[in-house]
Image (cartoon, rainbow, N blue to C red; front, side):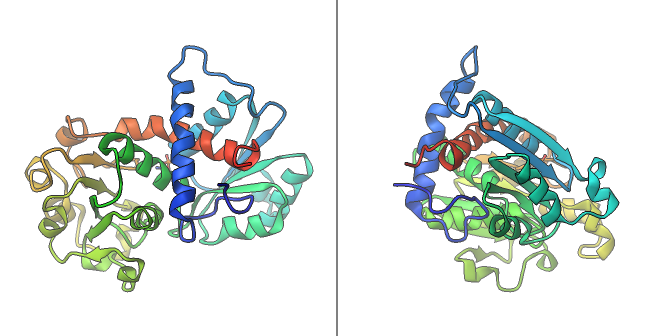
Length: 308
Ligand code: CP
C-alpha cells in the first residue's frame, strides 16, 4: 500500500486504506516524540519549507518539529516578511522555494485551491496546511488518530461537529475522513453557518444541537470565527454562546465516555466552556501532541520513501 501521488492537498478523494496507512505510520512516530532524545535520521538531507499566508500556532510549529524529529532541515516563510509583501505571486514564490531545493512545501493560504495549484506547479511535494474554508487534511488526520487511539476504532462511531461549519476547513476535512472510515457525522450550528449542500458529503445536519449531541461518541467543537461576525451571520457572541456553547450540561447529552475535541485556537466561554475544555473528557491537548506524530507520518510517507 502506498499514498497515491506526491502531495497531500485534501481528504475528499483519499481511500480508507490510505487513511489507515497514515494512522498506522503515526503510531511508531508517537513513540519517537515520547522519547527523551527525539531524533531519528529518516529524513536526513531532506528539506521542508513552511509558507504561511495566515497565522498559525499549532500547524506550523508541529510540521517544523515533525521534520526536525526526522532530521530534515526546515525553513519557515511568513508572507508578511517575504517578497509576497512586494507583490510576488504565490506560484512565483513557490517556484523560487523549489529552485532552492525544497523537497516539501507546507502551505497555508486564505484561498481555497491554493495548495492544489502549487501541487500542480511544483515537482516538490505539497502539503495543504489549510486553504481558505476548503480543507485542512493534517488536522482531520490527527483528529482521526486521536479518536482511533482512544476508542480503538472509527467505524460506527457517532461524531458531532458543532459550530461554524460554513467557514471551517477542519469540518470539511473531518467529514471526508470520518465518513470514509465508516463513522456517522452529525452537524449542528446556526442555520446561517451550515452550507446548503453539506449533506451531499454524507454528513447529517441536525436542526437542534441536542439531536447532534444525543449519544455522540465524539463532540468536536469548532472555533467561532469572530472575525466574520461583522457579516451578521449570527446576532451576537452572547447569543451564540447561549445557543451553542458546549458546556457541562450539553456535554452530558453525549455518551458518558464521549471525547471532547477542538482544533484550536479556542474561544473559551464562547463555543466551549473552560470547565469542559479542561475537563476529564477533553483530549484537546492530546490532539496537539498527536498532530506532531501524524505530520511525521505524512512527511515519511511523502518524502521519506515510507510508502514504498
Ligand atoms: N488547528 C489549527 O490549524 O491551528 P493553528 O491555526 O494554530 O495552526
